[in-house]
Length: 406
Image (cartoon, rainbow, N blue to C red; front, side):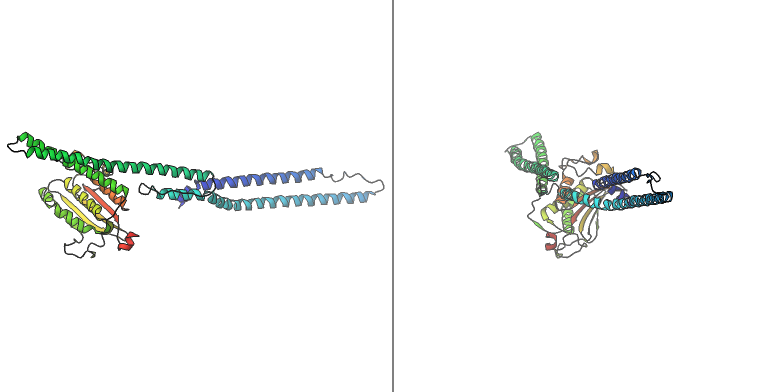
């Protein structure tokens, strides 16, 4: 609490309040000094007791009486001036406290448009760059700042849109020459008569590289689609069903590496009703094709970056607001700093994790992170203390179609 109070004292509002109170105290002190000087000058200008010229016919006793009255009057005036100065000082202190409150409220009122602009700017991300601050009011410095930020957001939106269009168009256009190259390789090995072994080997290598490039372009297309945020197949999706399907389709790869799969929680059967909540509510409202791509990529990553005879741990669970898919693998202890960078395109861990026979595109976890963020979720990567990697995909839970859509 003390730290939060200290932080608030360093804000612009606190500095404005201190400036307001300081100026008020300075002006009040100057006024009080002027009043004291005037009172002191008035005392000095008065005729001192005993200096009043004696009247010719006035007896000495009368003169003494006059001097006594003048001394009493001077004492009364001094006492009155002291009371006025004391009251003014007390009033100045009280007004200083009141000015502190008034200055805080006034500074808050002046800075309210800036707080509104800050909150609106924080809500704007790469997924909603079309939003603007749209501050209304007189053409003052605050509106100029808001208009400048709106112009910056407009330029950023154009740059992001141009980047997405370029990636999508380039990936789409490159599929035609790839298909032509693949057809040429197939024709070369399908000619009648014997085909040289070198030709067959070269054709096989070309097909492998073309498949790799095709997967890379497909990854670019998925990234462009998720960043654009246009989903037309949103529905309630069961994570445990997708996990079961992904593991079944990759049973041969799992057996080839002699991997042990550990499932946590209930597993959905093929004939299980779609609306049943067998895994505690691990159901999300999302694009079925994209969420399936998430599950496939995470499982593929766990298989490809695993050692022979290793294991894969898969769990789906949910809480009140989110559904989670967690996939763990064993292995050596990893550097947490390198693990944190795995969601970036073309980032892998170590040489033993990069020799994959040309199967991967280096975009698997990047695509997972992009899809999760496009659905309002996140990708969490962490190095296990015992060794290996833990991948957790967090997505908003679907509490019925209407609630999830809202």
